[in-house]
Length: 254
Image 1: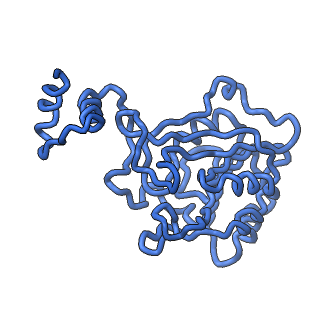
Image 2: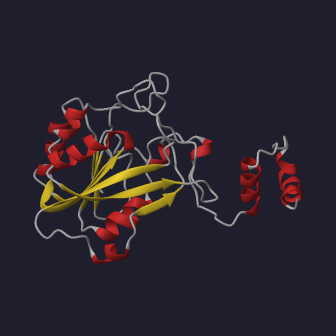
Image 3: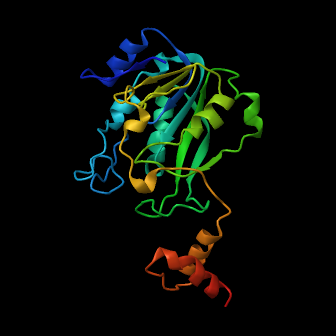
């Protein structure tokens, strides 16, 4: 797989120079969106929790994606809930017509919603992927006819999106070759190429907080179900983890 970093030149110039006339049939993009409230903990440009450099909305929307996408193409665009109108406009300016969306539901190990999310109006446990097409007759592939538009997985480090989105949705539902824009590390899969300032960084080299290591979802966990029951009923949690199971079992019988 070929990767390319972004340097001092504008992102638009870098993308065109790197592409060198090549085009891709499916575009997968997770732009470094700017947030209007830069002091909120959700904002990537938060002064104390600085996570990555953002681009202006105009820089993102004027990126020449239409010049690296095939005449008939698909686009998957990650878009935060708070800036949905801007995301739809970005998709349009890139040359794609909006057709629908995919929803990433962030869940805990027990399969329930992961309430550690943030938001000014609601506690967000979902993120959207806007899906657009370009060109006549550009339907999704046959497997998409039975593919629901919901993906429920545990979240990883800040801003990292689930790898399953590429395999479960993009590769099954859209034709290659594939280009990931603003890639967060290398993509070790055939028929993919990655572009972005972190495209040459190994995905596992990013710092991972212990609480956000992802992992499988286990929907058959009596211990976690009891913990959930105890929290919902307002019962006092024990101070030692070793006492959780037995004490909860006794209270659940009452």
